[in-house]
Structure formats: C-alpha cells, structure tokens
Image (cartoon, rainbow, N blue to C red):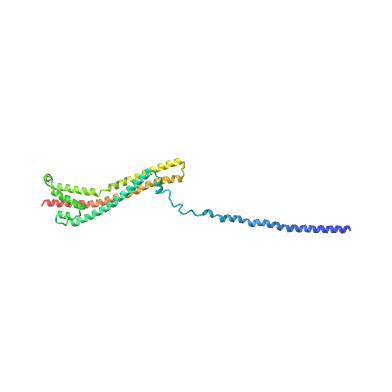
Length: 283
C-alpha cells in the first residue's frame, strides 16, 4: 500500500514538472514579440525630419535684393550739401562740354561748306565786289573779302602814306585773326573741364571718405560691410570726374584738328585775296 502511494506521488510530481516545463517554453515567444516591435518601429522617427528638412530652403521674397544700397541713389540720399554740390558741378561741367562739342561740330561743318562755296563762286566772279556778293552773309570768307575791299577804299589821307601792300596785309591779317578767334570760341570750356573735372571728383572722394571715417569712428564698427558702402560711394565721385574729363579732352583735340583744317583754307583765301588786291591797285 505504501509502495502504491509512493508511485502515485511520483506520478503526480512528474506530471507537475512536465506542466511547468511546457508553461515556461510557451511563455518565451510571447516575451520576444514585444522586443521585436520597437525594433521595427525604430526607423519611423528618423524618416520624419527628412520630410520637414526642405522647409528652411523656402525662396526669398521677390525684389528683396533688387535695390542697390551702394549706388548713386544712396550717394545722393546720404550725402551732405558739399557732396551734392560737387556732384551738381560735375553734371554741369559734363553738360557744358557736350554742348560745346555738338555746337562746334555743326559750326565747323558749316564753315567747311562756306570754304567750298568760296572756291566755286568767288574766284570765278568778274570783280571782287561781285565775288563778295556771291558768298553768304554769315560766311567768314565774305567777312575777309569785305575787309580787303574796305582796306583798298580807305587807303587815303594819312593812311595813304602807308604802303598799300603793308596796309592790305594788316587788314587781311586782322580779319583772319578775328575769324580764328570766333572758330576757337568754346574750346577754352573744354580745356577747363578736361583739366579740372578729375580734381573736382577727387575732392568729392576725399570729402566722402572723411565723412565715412567719422561715421565709422562714432559707431565703433569697422567691419567690411560698414566700411565698403561709404568708401565705395565716395569713389563714385572720382569715376564721375573721369567720365566728365575724358570726353572733354577728346572733344577738344578733335575740334582743334578740325579748326586747323578750316584755318588752312581761310589763310589760303586771304593770301589769294591779298594778291588780287595788289594786282588791282597796280592797274
């Protein structure tokens, strides 16, 4: 009887052990499942910033960089009365030089046409009076011819004591000098502008740099963005001065050369007129 009880207790213990073993093996897969879930969900937070990243690269508002803070507008707006006055002087110099260049060009072209008309009409006339009347009233060649005829008519009285050759030569040379003086009108303006405008622009630059350094010293900021603007605006004055001077100098040299060609025709006309007057007085 006791053996049967032992056998029954052993059987119950064996069954209990097998039950516990099976329960432990069944519980292990259930514990692994939650561990795998976070591993699968881990990449999700990394993908979220990638979708939000392009947001800071949004385009800047249109026209934000269109205005130049260091241009002529800023120079005029920030400049004092000295800087503005210097800029106005340079503008007036430029306008005056271009006015002289344009007007003298048309004047010289007109004088060249008068020279061609004198060659065609004056010397083919039957008399000096007729030849002078064939020329235009505003022609410099008619002015010289009139002075030559006037000298021949006024060679009387005390003036008659002067040699006729000397007398007519003096009158024709005076007329030629008068024509040359009128042809050179305005060239002094070009010479003045060409020689002084660079220094006027340099004065504006020096004044602007001085004011810029004073403002920088008062603000206590000497970074490149604070220095480049005021100094660059000041250097614009030098560039404007050179832009005014170069056309004035080139225009002066060009007009002087054209004057020289016209005056050669005027001197030749005066010399021929002098010879004709001497020949007429000897008849």
